[in-house]
Image (cartoon, rainbow, N blue to C red; front, side, top):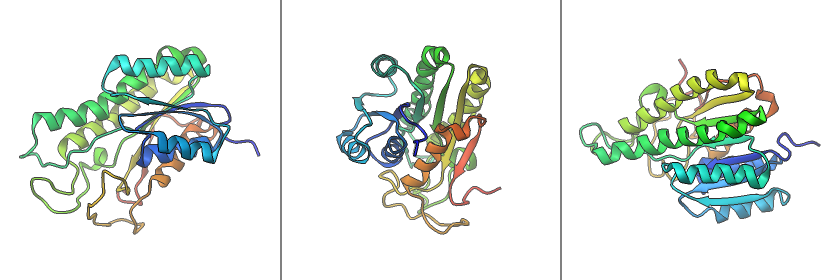
Length: 255
């Protein structure tokens, strides 16, 4: 059986664990070659990909996604070494859970710069010139239902509550707006730009959080739930889909 993404080339940020690792493995399962980007060690993800699909080429870059020169190096070298660039999954992020009263400038800018600037830098570097010259490409931005709802309630109120903080909500709302803006700009170039908005997902970021599952599907999500949505948006099956925000949240953000 032909795999959906045979010999496609994908960059996945935040690939060391959680949604990023699951997405990288799912893309490799469908035949893609993978470039893992993270400030953390990605060797475990690399090994799991190679065990899953030995024909997938896997490269690792340990960089700070907020730094333009480092981002451009990853993108340019990927296109040079692998001959193309088909998919970028902008997943890497941070989440401060401090409330508005307690939030500092440092916390604010950490989430804004990582979640929003990192997505901007990778999207810009991938599209111009590589995807533009190629006449095709898929940008998939991992946002959050926090960017839609203003942060779902979880845990207790206070200095560091279970609820994602205002910087996180603002950054993910910005990712959604930027996704729509870029989609309108580059559709004529053959490039699709979409966002996935997860609800509560069991990752390192949410460990220890006591989420109220006031939603249609009564369980917390898994990284693999999000990864399958990534595969869909990266695949030819989504060639006529752009500028969309796919909520993968068990119905937490119905409305």
